[in-house]
Image (cartoon, rainbow, N blue to C red; front, side):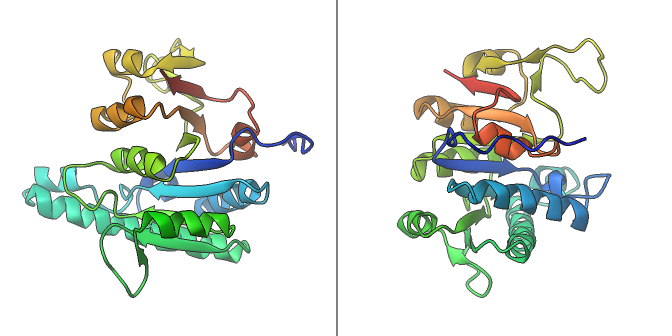
Length: 245
């Protein structure tokens, strides 16, 4: 039975960046777009926006195409990375559609100019959208090859002065080993950036961690697919793992 979280307290965060992997939108194998998963994610985001929290989203494209994997199969790395950026735009448009079906007003801003379907990324415009109650989805990563969407999330969070990066996954936090393979894996309630790097826990890549450390940007890693988990994290419940200085 799902438990509806209490609605009396104020949200812990005023402005948040939600980092979504492309696989979160995918089918059971992590590929394509699963309409049911998309609708579930959109409902959770709308629930948090209805609290008055300003929400921006950075989304990956791994359910469609990964640049690094493409380069391993003979596609030039730079070309593959641009293909991956376009995959994130496909996911952004799918999420925008799902959110608007939930009644949320959204804007997609892309780091690659595709004027027919998205706005260009302009920081001041993005902030203004947030102030007007819109959800902003950032697509195409940083717009540059060799940088991951984790790095894009760290960069955009700093640019828009987000309070926190909420990294949505399919596990309930950061473990010292893979909990799917090791039943004795230990989950961390909190961990420092440096410890995560030293342990090679793969929460984010080194560039993203460096940006978060420089800007003192906390990261909360949590399971998006638990009932009301997104809302519970935003309300300050001790879910997932906090990564900070």
